[in-house]
Length: 385
Image 1 (tube, helix red, strand yellow):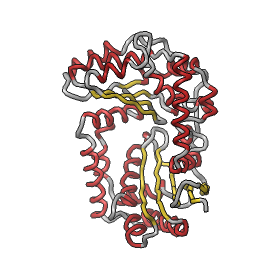
Image 2 (tube, rainbow, N blue to C red):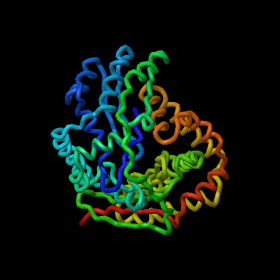
Image 3 (cartoon, one colour):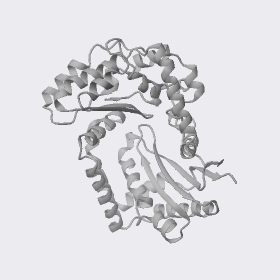
């Protein structure tokens, strides 16, 4: 079950509500007391879990096909009719606050969150999904019940069923389970956010006592799902830069110059604005030279098309990764649900065709458009001495 009710749905003063609600969903309904759901699924040999991102909340069950109707009935009961009792709300808030404290004790989480605030200063993507202690303490169980009534509605939900189940059986089970929604509460006022392009460099340095190596984190805005083809092109550029030992930055920075202990690049597709990052772990004395060399390689991508044989190697790598990611029921359910949450499920199957269609000149244009060496955010973490 994928619900378009992630952190992006929260007003700023409600930051953390979507993730906190993910916890509270499992605290029962008028029909199921707290703990009943987990016990009922586990006694049938099943497994359940949940997660929250900026774009969605995600709940899943692994269960034998014979128990599909029972599993859907139990999951729908929690999602549609969560009671969010006052006492459980107060107890679970302490659990969520402890999760936040543990995250804040992780230097890499602190650094990445600082980078996100720099990249997205006026958009929820810049806020932690966990919220802050201030926002978590300021909200009530009544507020959460309102949030639930507003967003946990049919138009925001996608049920994905993958496994040895007949289509008609799955559809009938879903229809029977997901019914009886309470009337939707209207939004008090529409939430609108801006995602202004970066003009110039956004730099920050942080000294942390709990690290022995420096971190260099660099980030660029990428396109949202409305420009999915561009987004997939940036996936290819990410692999070209730091997708393995033969990639440009890994080969030069780690293998040849040995300036870094690790370097990687990542492209994260998001609904409104995707994220392209390059990160390195290194000794502080190599920070400036490393950032300069990364800039040089980005300028090369913008100035010179990739060699066709090199591009074909990256295409094979990504298409193979895609094939390997569709082998299990869990992987397929995740693939379809993820795309349902941020765009539409049919897009899930188009990735290989997009990747195979790219020409070197098209990727050169994307590097020029999105990976400017004059417009990016950089966060540097240094050990305190």
